[in-house]
Each structure stands twice: as C-alpha cells, then as structure tokens.
Image (cartoon, rainbow, N blue to C red; front, side, top):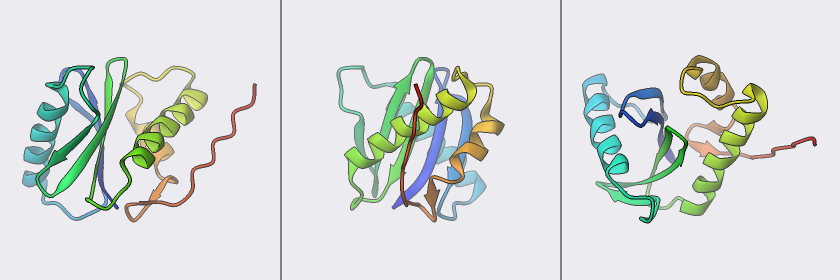
Length: 128
C-alpha cells in the first residue's frame, strides 16, 4: 500500500505531496526532510529502492525532479517503479514538457491513479 507520494526538485524543495495515511503536519515536514536527504544523497549507480524505518522508499529522477513513493513492506517495488514511470509519461503527454512549476495541474493528474493508497489499474494509451 502506498503511504505517500512526493515530487521534489534537486534543491530539496517539495513540489507536491500526497499522503494516503494520516500524518500530522509537523511530522510530515520532518519525514519529508529525512526522505529527501536519503534520496538526494544517493549516486546514480545506487539502487532506487531504500529501506527506511518501517517502510520502503522507491524513487526515480527525471532531469531536476525526483519522484518518491513511500510504501509498506509488502508492496512490489518494481510495480511502484513502473507506476512512477507511467505517471511521468501521462504528465509528458498532457503537458508536453515536465517542469517543476506545474504542480497544481499535476495533483489533479495524480488523482485517478492510486485510491486509498493502492494502485488500481494503470492503462496508458499513447497515440503516435
């Protein structure tokens, strides 16, 4: 199950955050800070899956943007990794260029994907 979804730029600023479990605001900022440090400090050669406290972090980097998903231990890492890629493909189709300033539109694009922290169905149709 997905616990949270973050979009972060290379400077460590959160551009979008969506939580699927209740987390107090002051704990969110602390959690985001620690998660962002964990992901930004890793090199490109290291794995994109991180064991963090009682859950896993799966992240991908697209240019200056990091997408980080926190999941419980039973979630399939590769499925979430593919989910992130499909989400970016959808953004790319709708907005033609993914930049870190369009976060309000991104939030509405993210809404249909996960429901209550579970990915229901991903179906990306790309017309050439």
